[in-house]
Image (cartoon, rainbow, N blue to C red; front, side, top):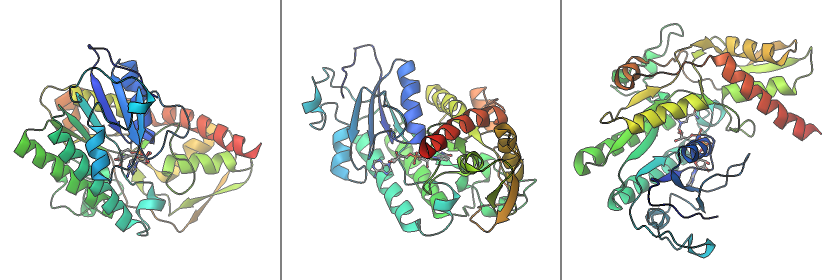
Length: 347
Ligand code: NAD
């Protein structure tokens, strides 16, 4: 697929455009009239991409990365007419990563893949992006970089941006993110590459992974509830007393776009909700939305830290904005979509 850009349109590259956040981001950027090239190992799974061009390929491969920054790359040449403007991308959003929820990140079984794959992608993108003279790049870090020692008390987790060091993330996923934050910041210092870094806190919504092992808590719980018979039982990992906050996808994207548009604020900054709930409260909300009566059975399973919540003081100060949507409103939309997926499988 290929559409040419008009001279007034800003050109954007979205890496990871086949994933959950990347595919929603492409839709948002198209609404804002950007010209978008998407890149991923795969197309979006649940709806057709809205990118003007979509290139399939492996971002761990340096030669592939070199090509995607070239507006005239051979990869898209056979698909249509060449774009006439030779300039580099105005904005790059580096959403590609080897990632998943607790069942993928905290079991330890994927540690080597997660670190190697994501580090290679980030090294390739930032170095070839800088050589191609891209104008601005966004990197999504994670709340998983925050130290374990500040997240032992479920009622009082500390996740202010300045609490990241001394670093002690509880997963290799978090260590890769903190390495990559530093990598992008080094390119900012040494090459004046305009980097923007956010630390996302549990983003959820429709068209995200909901089965297969990479799904996160809100999607996994929505799936279990949607699959359960009224009067039945669902399993929840751990005692359910661990706390988290969850951010609806649309709010995440608004935060990202505000950070990219800010004059001179580079982050790292939290993009998350401050509405902290226990996993038991999250489960109760989903059960209530479903209208079913269900029992909850707590079973052993990977859980991550005991407490985590976004601290939005910095984003309020620097961007004059913070997410406002209630968790329950986002869960209603997500449950409805996951219920449809479950029913499609059954019938
Ligand atoms: P996702 O898994 O849905 O999307 C990641 C995409 O990257 C996938 O489509 C995958 O195919 C692609 N990808 C992986 N390896 C690749 C490779 N070698 N070459 C090309 N493409 C490759 O994840 P997401 O939830 O959309 O997350 C997007 C970004 O935000 C990631 O960097 C993630 O770490 C970060 N983040 C997400 C959350 C969240 O709650 N979803 C929280 C914190 C940070």
